Length: 428
Figure 1 (cartoon, one colour):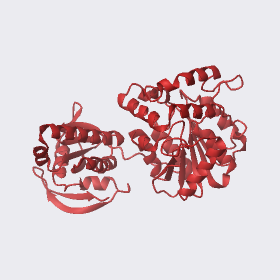
Figure 2 (cartoon, helix red, strand yellow):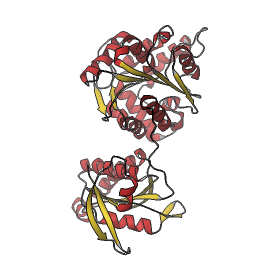
Figure 3 (cartoon, one colour):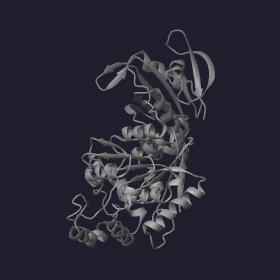
């Protein structure tokens, strides 16, 4: 079993995913990764590739009982005696069975978009498909598997038509499992019915379901809420099926409040804007060495890497001049984390960045930002050492309590800016 651990909080969350898993490919999606990082801010998150999928051994089998043992094996390997079990979609029934069977190892049960029974029948009209429709889909699946990612729109309607997201989903399918194994797994899942298990669950349970879920009808969530003793039910607006899509912060907040009794506010939202400047150290010399074509290829790879991090941390690209980026953020903590991640993201390219961050009142010029705060941000970046994120004293004061730490770089005069400015370097 392949697994990963993210975060270092005082409690554990075991994430039991839906139909497909391939941890390295899933981690490439900024929204998916951001959801994990949000949970990892208050817990240790343990995720795994299901048996027969991703980086786990491609072994036969996979009944609910066998896969329940897989959860125990992963918990043991990760050193987790007791955890909150988070089940999404098809991972919901497995999580319910585990919680009912091993309440001593289950701190809480967290169900997000969880299904009860996939087959639509007379006594369960809220399934995903009738048997006839399901069999027809399985007959054509080998020809469709891993060829196109357009099916992402079924699970995440908010991402429908996004070429980048659909290409990512195509790779998730291709990397997760072969077409034949996918059919075997889906046929097994189609036979699941946990209606008799639900009333036996005796652990604290949170159920979150989007009202317009296009895959798992909201009546699944309502049934669970009505039949799991003392369950807490939250019904949200939205149509996406997976928890990490639109509204992910709200879902993560519900989970945090259920487990800890408190809900962190998002990174400080202020009328002031935070600007981030980055540029490549020694760019002129590097361009001369590589030549025009090599330099162009390197810049394209650099730009792609920076833009992935901007999307991940909700930054807005304002300008790209040569080898530098100017971006804005609605919170300084996100800007700092983006800068740190960007420096690491381009290192495999043989590139070293410097970055500067400042928060101040900016002038809105169309869809751009201007004013003295932008100039200060540029001057701060210019004083950063290779591989360093340098911030103004304003930024350092605003992120107090965020967990970020700094080294004092003393006071400096910034070219064209009145007075002296206290500068701080972000420590890793």
